[in-house]
Length: 440
Image: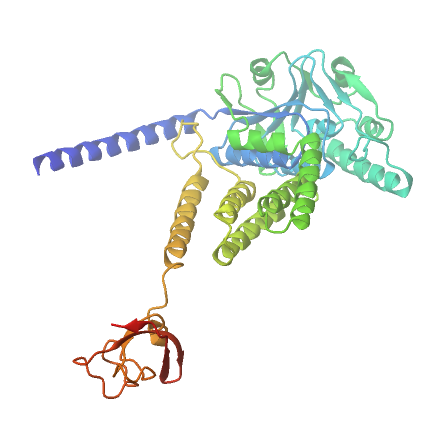
């Protein structure tokens, strides 16, 4: 009892200490807002858009001094690009776009994203531009579709340039003529605002600037602010690689062959499951399905597999496929968020708890089904089939047997006389049909 009290007091003291730590860290964070640093690398895709939205939302929640996005991209999907620029334009905290490190580029979609920042900067030996839309294979768009895509992109980038007070004509030329400029040319043409060597140099140079956000005019106070790196978490990094265009083509090919193999050999199950999951992921990577549609599709597919596991003997393949589909769908549909303790930047995944609970429920459901499957029916006339009865007389071998001395179809049952062992082979109505085996 005394040991229990000591343990309880220790736990209470620990809780108080953690609470005090949280309050202190929160107060310090409120006194000195940090500068969040995000990274937009590689091809722009739906995962990039989800990541940018997460970082901006965290900055708004924590009232960050500014959010710096370090950009190095060859371009990407136009829908994801528009999602990012729309998020920047609606941000309630200052967004600083920075083409870096030296040798990096903000090509094609990167041009839109860079110009959408409240402050745009470039590192030495970087370039920006060449924003003409192309098809998914990188080739030229032909016919009326080319004109529609080009005019739509021009309207979007010129709107961004007007809102941010940048060179509207150059923005249009970057789309129509695919012009690209170096950092010194970008400065002289009013494409970007300044040149900086690195992030620390950038936050020192932008201190004191006035920017207009969705919540009003804000004067940047970034000098001496802490830099808080907020890159892709492991799940986002994995999905970012999966939705790479080359990987997406491989996934679509794998899914197609999986479905063909399943249809050619019904009952294999595994190729069909892999095929459906791979095709949904490929459509998500191509941008045909957005994150919500892809996540819901995979979760519905998981439910279908769990239901089929009850009806179809698949030796657990349907359950495993359902678990994988459910997990991928949850990750896509519900983006992971950051932790709750102030000052601690360690990822906490609530999906793990959902996954464990769901997996446990499925496991017990399948185990119960397997345990009950071999049990015979334990009620009604089915109990008589195979039971051993005793005939009323050895001379009357056609007499109805007495089973457990409760079956009324055996008149004049006498256990004192010689009897015949008669197992029941058939039951019709109130009568039984015994099989001849021999004397008891």
